Image (cartoon, rainbow, N blue to C red; front, side, top):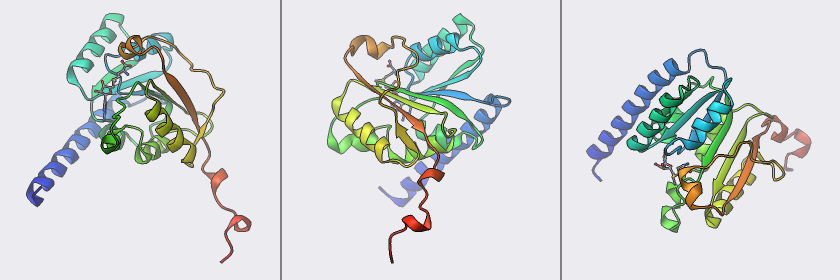
Length: 213
Ligand SMILES: C[S@@+](CC[C@H](N)C(=O)[O-])C[C@H]1O[C@@H](n2cnc3c(N)ncnc32)[C@H](O)[C@@H]1O
């Protein structure tokens, strides 16, 4: 790829992030906590979740415009004032969210598994995404919920969360809210995992722990 083309792609990405930044500052003005669903599809899960939790603000995002349009129609029919859906790439939206955003809960439900090894870089669960989610989360409070039917993606997510200093797996924790999604109807056998945002401070090395020089 030529330098010119690379520059144009990066400029377009920056412009999208800036537009999202402006939009999200307005949408989240006065909101104290957010429940986020990444890759919300048609919005089945989050519409039901927001109806059952009217005191929390729910934000769903997906790359595909038609899915977001359907999700917004669902929201409007049910008159859910605490719910919005945005067409955006997860990495760009997370970059654009104000740093003071407090994610109360995060859901990734049947994200695309990208089974071929050369495509694993396209998976949503990546160290950089976990870093940014951790920055926007509250220690000892925020939970990240992940569900997939794909064994390889489950192991991938489990391993990245287990290694990440800001996340702590909670194998005993129960999925907090069940509702069928478009993909759960087709993929009834699945695995879930839940991780808690933990204090980074508890992981900082004290001088006594430091390796001898
Ligand atoms: C397999 S579908 C699952 C949808 C829904 N969670 C369900 O269970 O029915 C995965 C969704 O993730 C969305 N997606 C994939 N990559 C994304 C990204 N980088 N940012 C936002 N959404 C993404 C896709 O457009 C798709 O709608």
